[in-house]
Image (cartoon, rainbow, N blue to C red; front, side):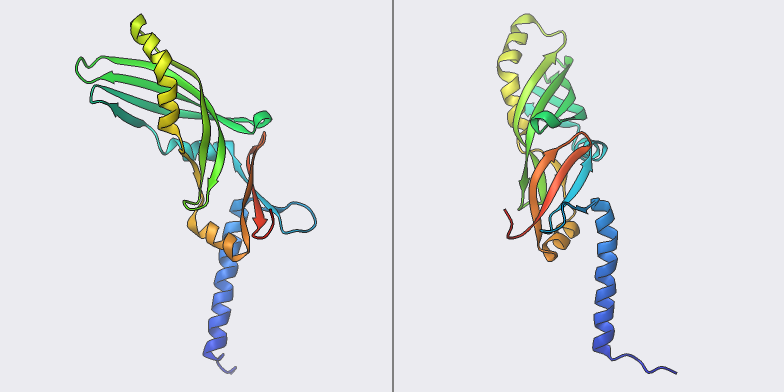
Length: 201
């Protein structure tokens, strides 16, 4: 009957198996592949469907203004803009008056760039630009006010919105492998996230 392994060797083998299992579980989900023959650069593809699912979890989003009007953004629909390396999102919009309880519906379309927030481990919206903001059945005077002020308000409300948050264990694995998030590139397939060796710029 074979002798038992020394406790220290057994622990090392357990740790190695655990790390191997973690890497095997995470790397396929990253869709990581070597970009070139050397340098250790890898890329992770976040599909349009995946991004849309992540954004949708944060809505509906409701904000009250001076206790008089509630603005609600609902049903985000994300699309890719590879030519400008940006994303676009369309929302359904609902305005509700607190006093008269009148309710107005409309829509909001905007496009934006992306930035990686290393402290939060998240990809955030950056440089948002409203392309369309409409509210149905508003009186003309109010429509003019909406057209003048609402786009800027919407850009401020959505500034730094989290588009994707990396699982903590995924970031920890990347750090252990000496990798960090590099370039964010919008493609026809989704968002390509470059993973670079820590010392590479």
